[in-house]
Length: 454
RNA sequence: GUGGAUGUAGCUCAGUUUGGUUAGAGCGCUGGAUUGUGGUUCCAGAGGUCGCCGGUUCAAGCCCGGUCUUCCACCCCA
Image 1 (cartoon, rainbow, N blue to C red):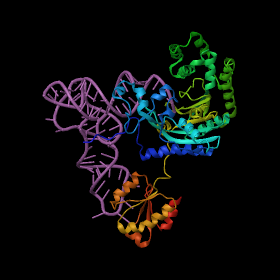
Image 2 (cartoon, rainbow, N blue to C red):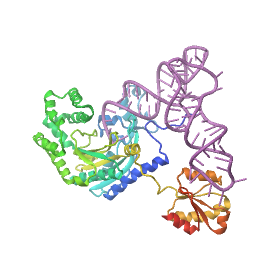
Image 3 (cartoon, chains in turn yellow, green):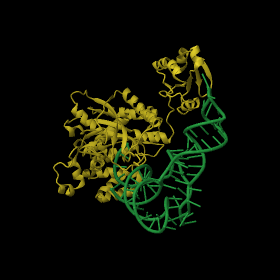
Image 4 (cartoon, rainbow, N blue to C red):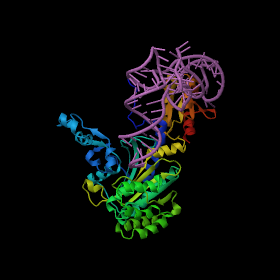
């Protein structure tokens, strides 16, 4: 016997019910993206490996799915080379394409390639799957959908503000209670500068990112292991211990970051962004969180992350500003900012909270029972009338037993069943049964269309 | 990538401790009671190489090894 069929680790099939729920998420974000004037694009599932490598940090490169060259992938490699060259290096010799890891890097590539057809500032949205060779867990998949919105070609902080509004609008439309965390890479750079460890910004930010999770002591230990001097650590401590309201934190940093121009720049940006936000019009809490670092190393300014306040599941949305991303592809001086909604995690949250709305509008509204050839011929024009009016209607394909056809309607949650037998054909009528109440009424085809139009 | 759990009917799970004939339950499914009326009820039935491969044993769902899946922690992230 053949092996049981299966799909690759970390990938999933979606049933019609799951698709209805996924589409609810996609439709919600798409609708909101559009009302802010963003335009859709799509890019290929695979990119040239050279476009992807080195954009996500050393860890990121390991998580890239590489596609083996077609044909004679061994190429000019000798048997000996195949054995002696380290696996990591060999990978790039026999593979030149990879599955995209996110939508931001392909977008930057897209912008560079299409720069002459694009009107800047360019506002685009993109809803497509991405792939990461991570070890799967709950809320972590190897294939998952991101819903990205980005503005490229504008330095204005109004773009950041707009994205915060979009995040807020999306999550309130989904009826999810979230906190929007924000920070700024320039502030993080400033901190590193102030403590005299400019070179170690990534180490420092990644360590303090864990503050909430592992506590002060372990963070300090990790920093020590990463080679941070005692002196620098002492200078860093007050920042980590910083508490209070957004305003209080900013005031503290105003002093602390004094010596760093970059740090002060970041602070000005955060202040301005908060200035745009009138707290009373925002549903979600917006929190300035100094421990927010974000691993992707192309961010240069504002960074964002959204966490559910009701379900523990990592971040469900994240993003930030990137000043140099298009530069890598040969177009300098174009800054962009964007956020990415993690559709699959949002799904898991909604699922766990049982907060998916009931579905209906696209589900079948009426099922015609099949009594045989003659009856079917009579039904065709009636079906046509209903469908022309946008009423989803089905005819049971086999002249099966009533019980079977009724059960089909029942388990599909079809609210109405139409019966056309000899009697109805003679009178030019249709018997309509409302499944929930069991009530039946005899209607002309025209009346039927009216009755189901509501 | 490192460490730890998990896998029995379509689904949710018993059974594994102490190896012993034909592996169970609930839900679902099929048929009937009801040959033009579903969702309730009653009756009957089908459905399993116990994830896969190998080993120990007279005998393995149960013990041992490997492997895959899912899940958990780390790492990192949507």
